[in-house]
Length: 351
Image 1 (tube, rainbow, N blue to C red):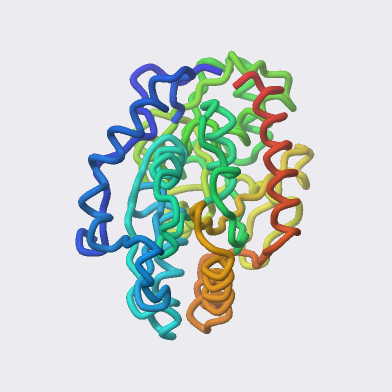
Image 2 (cartoon, rainbow, N blue to C red):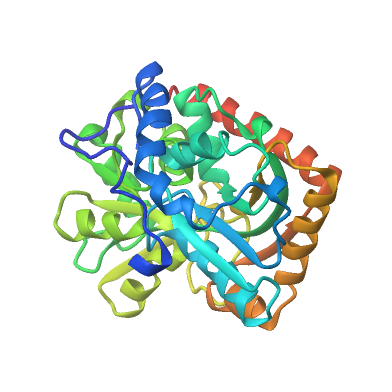
């Protein structure tokens, strides 16, 4: 699948802490580089907040949450909502967020895999990371960490500028199929959910993967800039990243990529409009390898308490997230199935 000339890789600037408040090419270079670069650029941010679990630190006193993406995107929002809920109800006295952006979350995962035994640090994960692992042939996978919980899921939407001639998804597809390469899309990281949706929709309309022009960005904010500047004709990302633009009348939502209509979102599904494309964007938390079973159980309890707080339930409602909380053996089974499904889709689409 091609990307537009001059598009930027999904790697961003140095990490952000609370105080500061794409498609990677195949091959070994990104995976060799991230271990060196990420260690340098995030080491200072982690020094103050991350301590070895073997030091006996109380996990409810200090906890670092790593968002493997830049500030302002879906992963960052999810992680900071968890942080706020933990603080509000004193589930954790001092919860800090650190951003380690790049390569669909695999930069953050690569760094996290070196933090063996550091139980006071959790990493946000989800569908985008699973896709990026498959796309990048990442040497580090979810098998190198300990998944704690799947917590929520949300759905992507397909949007166009308000002045676009496309009034429906049928209008868009009709034009797209005429000259696919000349029809640029934009969305999140290459290999992530946004990219997979465009690729799958292309497949369902007899458009080859090599004919699709996709401009990967770090998230909805950058995708909005590309779309409004005329660099793309349509964009795909999480509903919340476009909600303000849609409500303000600056963008038009053509479809939500969910199996069924979503309460509170007035937009038809792709399925209801005759396109058999429906994917979910789940998000959850990972623990590092090398921690004790007692530490893992404590972290699992912290997460379970957090998602029962009024603040988290309010965040779920505000962000139109669905509750899909899952832990234990059921979570392990889900991750095996989800990974196999995404790997098969990446291969089928030729990504």
